[in-house]
Amino acid sequence: MSNKIQIVAVGKLKEKYLCDAMAEYEKRLSRFCRLGIVEVADEKNPKGYSEAETQIALNREAERILPHLKNSVVITLDAKGLKVNSEQFSRILGEYLEQRRDVAFVIGSSLGLGKGVIEASDMRLSMSDMTFPHQLARVILIEQIYRAFKIISNEKYHK
Image 1 (cartoon, one colour):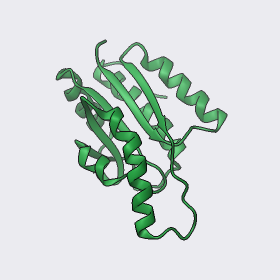
Image 2 (cartoon, helix red, strand yellow):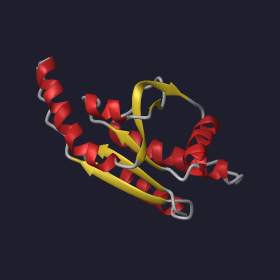
Image 3 (cartoon, helix red, strand yellow):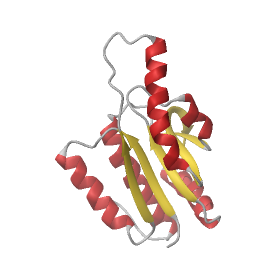
């Protein structure tokens, strides 16, 4: 179990039920990979931010994210990214694992992702055409990572 999967997320997970779900999937994933969860501080986003102020905030968040991406395949969650189903996702993840590559998934803030993070990205992935709160997106992502490992291992997983 040499591969490391890391989730780098802007902002803290606050709701207990979401923390409980994350903890459950972290436990389930422990037999498949080394999992790391990194939370970086988000920038405040007052209403009425100009485009320039938004870019400054995104750049500050990017400065906090980028140090955690070294030596990893970087997959950013992006509404404009590639849409895949669970089987396709498992094949993509499996290819990186076969190459003995560590994988870092990045979930930005409500502002999005800074240019530096997007440029560091090896793949931009869309979870859905629907919009999810960032905290819920973390739970959905970790569940899909777990599902991918089950598919890769030819194990059944229905729930």
